[in-house]
Image (tube, rainbow, N blue to C red; front, side, top):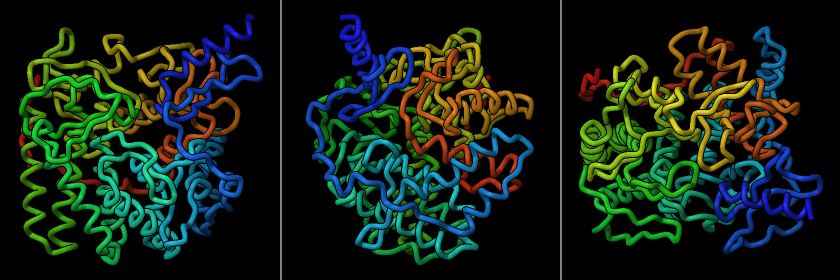
Length: 467
């Protein structure tokens, strides 16, 4: 009877996991012999035995050499880095059409968001290694084809069928940013193929359509949407957060920030890569409208902290004050390219987010940081600790964040989705590629001597000097 009760408790905990997916929770809440999993209401097709076996890892000499030779002076950090840098090659596989499929980890599907982040560390090697460049172009081409199939979907299978259709604004932004960054790093214009042109155009048209969701010709809906009304703000309506959880208010400010940066990059791609002044102009017009909407509706006053960015707003006077461990997050805004870490509104926001006033800020014996309603209460996300490290105002704060991040390692030399800050043996997602790749990127730029990867700028835009 005790085991049955524990098992039911475990299933309840897992109800916060990705909808329609099996998510394993390691820790005291899971009795021996049970996996904390949520059954899908509409399960995806079963994976056959042949495809269930992992493909051989994609192997690059330049990447392997960098992993072997990396030495920061911290043996634990270096061990985690080596696993992290090689992870994308283990999650990726070449497809028959010459593109590259990147599964998220222990879930056999590709997220537009996750796959873009997972391969980012390989951008450091793309200019000097043609094999890495070809690999990245294979990722970019596949993502563009996904966008043509369904720009409202966030995750796909290897055969291009939709795994999950949760409309998340960041899922349109990430492929744009990956293509732009690849181009800026390599100077390789051959990435701008007809497939990529069509995919990026689909992303732009979808953003434009969702500026006014109530009259959007797409008629997008989903059974998990909360259906709250919104006002006109110039921003882009989105149904779900990067956690795959439904929004409470459908203007998700971190995603809007990301869209401003991505639209600026898209305008440059359209103008210089595809020589399409019309699409470039449309992207810039939308960028300006979204930015003005953020500054007008997305900044609210908070006691003790001043004017801060809200997490979500509806344009009707309601706002949600919090942050989530997934990226884009409010904490990660300067890393994404929206504003700067010393902007007053961001400084105030950071103060709020890293305090108990943020309902998803948790502190334990080994770490403190931002969690998510997507995972058990009290669990901290390594992605959030990385965002905190990447935007830390001082080296001392960054070093503290990294020490806590390494304390999340349960002994397998890997970062996971979330963890109990009192006991790192309790965590979610045994195999989750995204935080590992971000740790590889972070390590290469902080202790590895590599310059940060480029991102678009918002320096031409006007920010209210919030005090």
